[in-house]
Structure formats: C-alpha cells, structure tokens
Image (cartoon, rainbow, N blue to C red; front, side, top):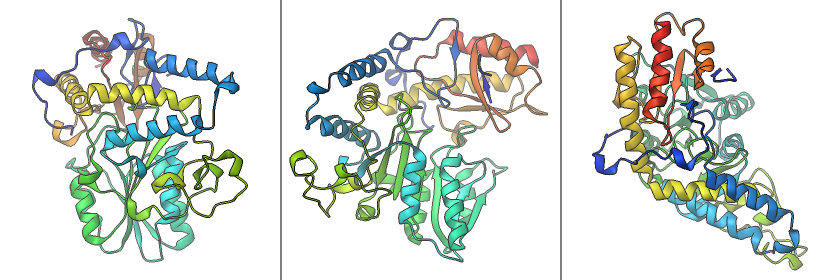
Length: 394
C-alpha cells in the first residue's frame, strides 16, 4: 500500500565519503517528499533524456545498423557487471526478476525429499516459481520465519541443512530492509554444495555486493528501483558453472554468429559466450538500454560504497528520530543502510496514509511496516515533512 497521492548497512564512514545532495539531477518538485525509492525510483534528467533520444532514433531505422543490435547491450551488460564485481560474460539481459528466477529454477535440480529455503514474506518473484517446482517434484518449501531477535542471517543458517536443494534469498528484506549477511550464507551453501539464488532488486546499486565474496549461483536485479533505471528491464548474473545450462527460450541473437545478419539462415547449435544464452529475445531493446546505461554510469560515478555510506547516515538520523517518537526500528546492524522500517504499537495508525498523501510525503506500507527509503535526492526538509505528519498521529 502506498502513501502518496496514490495512496552493509554497515559502517557510517567519514564525511569525506559523503555525497552532497543530488536533487538537481532529478525532476522532483520542492513540495514532494519522495521517500519511496524501494517502490519505484524517480528518473534522473539524464536518464529521461537518454530515453527520449533513443525513442527518436528508433523512429529513424535507417540509422540503426546491425552492429547497433549489440553495442549498447554489451556496454550495459558490462556496467552492471562492474556494480557487482562480475565479468560481463556472466551477465544476461532479461525483462524481469521473475524471468531470471525462472531461469534458475529451470536449471537447479529438485527432487522429492529436498527443500528450498525462502524467507517469510519474501517478494513473490522469488517465491512462486519455487513453489511450482516444489509442487511438481515433491520438494518441500521451508520458510524461515521472521526472527524475534532480528538476525535473519542466524535464522537462515539454523535451517539450511543437507536436505536443501536451493537457498533463494535477497540481500535485504523488501518490507523493512532486514539485512542478510550473504557472505556467511554463501559460505554455508558452498559447504553443503547448495545453489544460492538471489533477488538483488532492493540492494543492487545502493548496497555494496561482490560476487567473488558471496559466490551466488544466480543473482538478478530489476532496473527500476535502486539502479535508477527503466521498468521492464533486469540483469541476471549466472555463475560460470551454470553457463552451459538450458535457457528459457531459443532466440536468434543468443546464438553464435548472430552478428552476421546475412548468415542467420545458417542455423547455429552453439550459443554466444557465457551467460548470453540466457538473454531474453530482443535484448537489444533500443529504448530501455540507453536509459539503464545512463543511470548505471552515474551510479558508478558516485560509487556504490559512497552511496551506501551517505544513505546510512541519513537513515540513522531517521531511525533516531523515529525512536524518540516511540516507533519500532531495527538496529543499524540488522537493517540495510538505505532502508528504515517503522513499526507502531497496535499497527499503522488509522488515517496515517491519508495524512501523508495530503502532505505529499511518499512512503510505502509493506506488511506491518511503514517503509521509508530515501536516496541522494532526499533533503532534510523532506524528512522533516515526514516527521511532522508522524508526530500528528502519535
């Protein structure tokens, strides 16, 4: 539920790594407090311009060459690889997280008596495909309940055992930012030889992530949240050991020698290198990829670690003020630094969402948590507007 006119975490770092406010790069009215990046990010002006230019160019097909079917997809693939410290060959371009998770499910074997480990209230894109696979194979879904002690990592490690055929998680919980130590989880999965499948949509681009440290088998992130990009685009990391697996579809551009348009009727059994066999058809998307490219270039220019440290400082201030009002907030060690989940005794107060909407304060309600997710465009005045409304209902 939305409130707006639509109704590593980790070290705080020194001020030297703090990024100054970047609202000037976005088209955000001064009277809108947009604290809802976990829902849908606003687009930077440069990203909108890239989309407009791409759409205009698409109207001139005589300017689009065979080479253009590959250039932007390759540069964008490489940018996402840099964000997660992967190699471009390990990245597939897909339309959504559900597509990436379905690719993982197709390739990870399940059998009766085995388990798939999920989190309670996990985002559905990393749930439904596993439930269907479990129904077909007779495997069991094991759901880790929300831990009373707040330590998701410990709770996950307590249930991952020799029966596990897959562990499917996020870096932080989408409802309130509850943090998962994926380095520790990854080590346990490797010890048991269990595939680790991640939805990084609520963390890629804002929380430092290193595939070399975590070693997931599959990891997918949608573009339209913390990657500050367009909707209907996502990026799928596939570990080298899975790169000879079965794609969801068989399209022409994923095959070897697809650059030779005149020779496309010389059908090829072999695929393009690495994870490209898992690319969605029409991965060249002339409208969306330039937008994603512009967004990720800016993210890399800021630096993911610097973004994380800047937002962790901002959310620490929000958490402190919320605690002073008597609201429940996870400790900094137990939540991602770009998230604050506010919980109220007795549940979300009646009328809160309407008051927030009237004040043009945009947050989300997920489960029993009011989710507050700022970004570099968030000002102190935005935060003050939020607390003015909260104080009025408490």
